[in-house]
Amino acid sequence: METNNIFNIRRLYLLIRRQLLSNATALLIAFGAVAGSLLVISLFVAYFQPANLAGLTGLYFTVMFIGGYIFTSNIFAELHQSQRSYQYLTLPVSITERVLSAWILTAVVFPLIAILSMALIVFIANLVMNFTFDMEPFQSVFSPLSWAAIKVYVVTQSVFLLGAAYFRKNNFLKTVLSLFVISMVIQAILALSAWAIFSPLSETGGIQIGPQHMSEQMERLFLNYIPSVARIIFWYLFAPFFLVVTWFSLKERQV
Image (cartoon, rainbow, N blue to C red):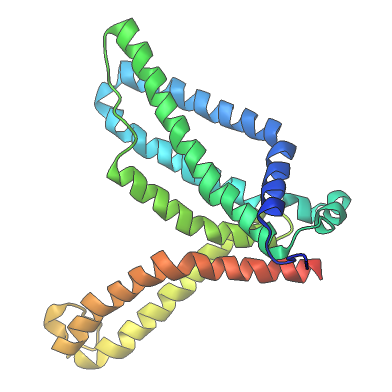
């Protein structure tokens, strides 16, 4: 029987286990420090400014997004360290398993632990406030908006996974800078496109965009088709595209 050199579930499990064990201490310290800080902040807000409790969920998820992006940006740190890269590249695993293990850790394990940590913070805060001040100020973090935020994180973190594989240093900051530059370019292209399309239709020569300035076909295009296509691209094609590019980036490094 020939060995499957592309994907093997046991090799994938061992690679994930290796990455978790090799970084367990640092990850536990980071999670403990962040969770402890959020708990203290939550208790202070509950006691001194209970009217602002609704904003705590937003704080939790902001921390989750930033922490998750930083964690994802460093998932291939071993690859970029001269002392450890040879050992990492010579592991008996395929490129597919490297990408899949990194994606599972950053897009599945991390948000799962994050949402459970949020729930634990809320539970402990409720116990403290209930038994100490006879208050129960916190609500569950398991809500439709929370799950929507998790889905957005799972999709968008794939960009930082590519940055982790492509950039050799300062992966997180370079990825953020790249996103900023790309967004500026896209906005410039959209602005020029809007000027080219709508300026000839305006009597003043300026850009006037609104339903009253569009034909029926253009209104359907801009208000129905483009948003629908954008949603499909974001939810179903965005992450797979960046995972494929990440695969080729790792293949180039391995060669």
